[in-house]
Length: 358
Ligand code: PEP
Ligand code: MN
Image 1: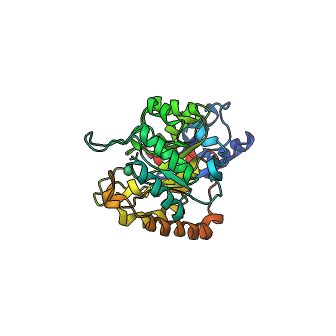
Image 2 (image 1 turned 180 degrees about the vertical axis):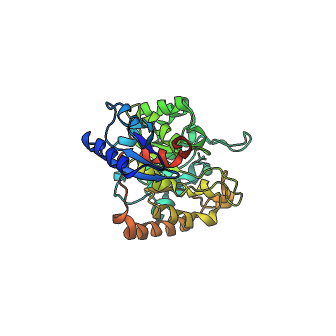
Image 3 (image 1 turned 90 degrees about the vertical axis):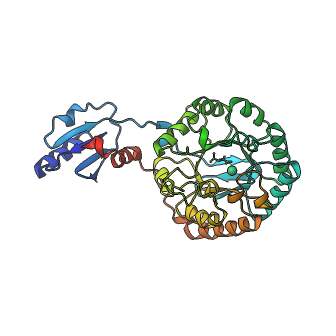
């Protein structure tokens, strides 16, 4: 519940309000949200009538709010366990997922898997079903690629992640893939979210191209609502007016999301920037901002990539990033404040919807 106070509330009115909140044992926090001061009541107010506050002098508005993503907000997320002893979440070492944008052929994926493993990656990525903006571009090898991915991942003891764009893809991928990726373009595909939720597999959910953080978390809620809490969120850049980069990596989304949910959040500097020269600096920045991991596109011969050539890095750059990750984890890891604030969605709402509070 949020109470909006009159800008000229009297000291005596404020005192009375605190008395009432204390009488009902309500934990609360005062927040300055220009022009009004607001009070966020953190305790459960389900059984409390808004009338108690509506009738108080100095209180101009009472907003009863339920979180639009209750499970995502309240979950005490457990680390997600992947094959080969790889885990993501909580205080573990940031997860480094690497591999090509697309699986191009059997030899390519077997060879790059070996190289990303040697460079320090913990998991393998590779596109089998590619969501291309243009239908005449390489759209992936489909089922054949899933089989190659599985083989390459097992040869190199790497859990494997690949995107599915439909229910049919999901059914095909279940046998071969450890983490199902829902790409940015499908973050709003609610039937697909429900379906992947029901598989019980870990899901990597990417933020939509122009999705707000709240929409993003509501999409995660679709998966959790199916009883599947194994969701890894991924900030992959959003559409802005800036043309220097493919998208804009929304770094502040990482700590904001960390306040709102205990689900792990990783960053994708490849799709966020579209530029190979920016992958290393933005990887560092994302980890420093608190990301639980990175997903990066790597190719043996980046310029020859069938898709997203401009953002592909070499295995040797990946190796430098893996070193950065270790250093940053040693530096910041233990001090990162990753605690989810109680009822943080209320504060988020208060700070992002000032118009409603007037
Ligand atoms: C990808 O990871 O290959 C991809 C297409 O990413 P996104 O959905 O973020 O564009
Ligand atoms: Mn790509």
